[in-house]
Amino acid sequence: MFSVRPILLLYVGCSLSFPLTSINKRDVPDFVRQYAPVAYLCSTEIYFPSDIGAQIAHTHPEDASGATITPPAALTLSNLDSLNAFADSGTNVYLTSNEGIQALPSWFRGTRPQSDGSTPSTVASAIVTVSKPNDIVDAFYFYFYAYNQGNWVLGSPALEFGDHVGDWEHTMVRFVSGAPTAVYYSQHSGGEAFTYATTEKGPDGVRPVVYVANGTHANYATVGPHDHTIPNLNTEAGPLTDHTDKGPFWDPLVSAYLYSYDNSTGVFAAYNGVDPTAWLGFAGRWGDNELPDSTPGQIDVFGEKKYVAGPTGPRDKSLGRRAVCPDGDSCDVKSSLAP
Ligand SMILES: *[C@@H]1O[C@H](CO)[C@@H](O)[C@H](O)[C@H]1NC(C)=O
Ligand SMILES: *[C@@H]1O[C@H](CO)[C@@H](O)[C@H](O)[C@H]1NC(C)=O
Image 1 (spheres, protein in one colour):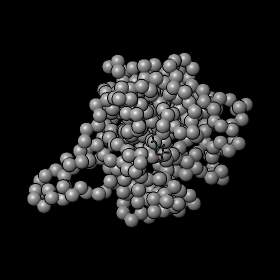
Image 2 (image 1 turned 120 degrees about the vertical axis):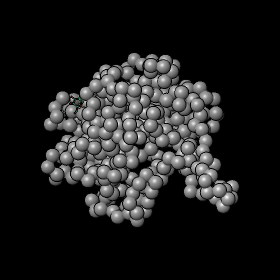
Image 3 (image 1 turned 180 degrees about the vertical axis):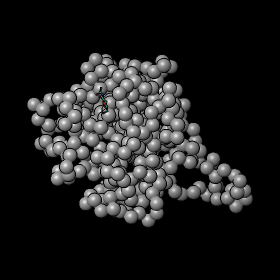
Image 4 (image 1 turned 45 degrees about the vertical axis):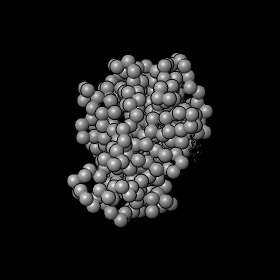
C-alpha cells in the first residue's frame, strides 16, 4: 500500500502539478453506493455517530498496565499502525480517553445527523469492499461511535453493563454478480442475517434499513425491543434489552471513507487514493481498557462489568468470511423478519 508505481515516478519528474493520487484512483462499484444501508437511530439516543479521526485526538495510547505509550510521531489516521510496534504487536494498546470513561466528556456524544441524514465535519463511516470467489463482493459498512452505553438490567441504572469508549458496528451486504443477495447486521458479539429481499427498504425503496439500538448501537432489521443475553450472566438478573425505533435518520454514505481490502495480502486501498489507510492496520483497541474492580463505580457481577474495554477495529470483523455471517458464527440467512 505504500509502494509507488513506476509510472507515477515518471510524472513526478516532469510535472509537479499532475495530481499524483489520480493514478490510483478507482471508482467504487455503483452497487456499493446504490444499496448502502440507511440508518435510523433511536429517538432517545444521545451517543451519536462520531468522527473516526477525532477519537485519536481525544485519546492517548496506553498499554494493558495503564502505562502511557509514546509513539514516534503524533498519531493520526495516517500512522495509527505505528502503535503495532508496542504492547504485543499493538494488541494490548488502548486508545484511552484523556478525561477517563467515567467523566463522560461531551465528545462521547458525537454528531447528531441533520434532517437530510448528513453529519457535517464528521466521518463516522468506512466502507470496505472485499472481492471473493464466485463473483461475490462483500461490502462492509462500518459505523463508528465514540462511546457505547451498555444496557440496564431490570431497568435499573445501578445495574448498567458494558459501557465502553469507542464502538465499531457494521452491516454487510453480499453482492453476487453485482446484485444484493443478503444483509448482515452486527449485534454485540454476534449478529443476524436476512436475504436482501426480506429487509425493510429506506425512502428510495432500494437501500436496506438498519435500526440502531439506543446506546449500544447494535444493528437490527426491525423496530422494537430486542432481548439479548450476556453469555454467562445469571439469568435471574433478567434479560438485557436493546431498544430501536424510527428516530433520527442517518445516511452513513454521505461522509464515508471508501476502501477495498485484498483478503490474500491483507492490504487496504483507498478508492480515491486519498483516504487514510494506516488506521485500518492498527491491531489495538479504540477505547479505554476495562476499569479495575477496585475503581469506585465499577460493577462486577459474575465477571460481567459495567466498564469494559473498547473494541478492536474493522480488520477484526471477519472481512474474509466465506458465509454471510462471520467465521465461527452459525447464524442463518433468514427470509422472514419475524423473531
Ligand atoms: C436511551 O439512552 C438514554 C441515555 O442514557 C436514556 O436516557 C433513555 O432512557 C434510553 N432510551 C431507552 C428507550 O432505553
Ligand atoms: C480470506 O483469508 C483467510 C486467511 O487466509 C482465509 O481463511 C479465508 O478463507 C479467505 N476468504 C476467502 C473468501 O477466500
